[in-house]
Image (cartoon, rainbow, N blue to C red; front, side):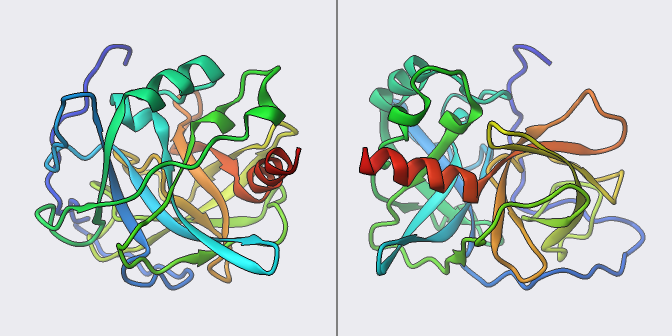
Length: 250
C-alpha cells in the first residue's frame, strides 16, 4: 500500500445489499465531520475525503472545552500516522487552512474552522508515539454538537462503536459499527476487531470510538492490516487527555 494515493470519494456511502439490524449509541447531528487541511498554497479539495473528525467536550477545570478531533496524517494524505515530534512540527507549520463538512451532508457546505491546539510535547518528547497524530482544532464559529469524554479508559473485551458513515460493507444510514477491544497498551494505544467483517474503513481515520452510553473512549487512527477480518488501531482518548493536561500544567 506504500505510495498509494487515496481516490476521490462520493459523499454517499455505498449501501449494503442486505440490511442489518444494528444497535448502538445515538449519534447526534453535527457531531461527526469530514476534516480537510490546506498546506501552503494548496487549496482544500472537498471532493477528496481522507479522514473523519468529531466534536468532543473535554473537562478543563470547572469548564469544558470543545475541540474538533481528527488525525494529523490526513493533512498529507498519508495512510500511516505521524509518530515523531519533528514530523508534527513540520506539518503544523505547513497548515494554512482547516475545513470541515458534516459527515452526512454535502461537501459543498465546507466550513472553515479555527486553529490547532499545541500537542502534548512535554510528555512525549523522548518517545515515538501515535499520540502525536491527534489534532485538536478549535471549532471557531462553526456549531458542533460535542460528545462527552469517557471518565475511564476501555478494557479488553469491552464493546466500542465506531461512529461514522462508511463507504462499503454497511447501509448508508448506519451511524455506528460495533467492535470488541482486543488490546489496551501502556502507550495509550488500543486495538479492536469489528463484528462486521465486510466493513470498509476507507476515510474512517479520525472517527470516534464510543462506549455504550455514547461517550468518547477512543479515536480510530488506522486499519490493522496484519489482522484477519476487519480490525483497527486507535488512541485511548481518556489517556491522551490525561497526558495533554499534564503537558499544559508542566
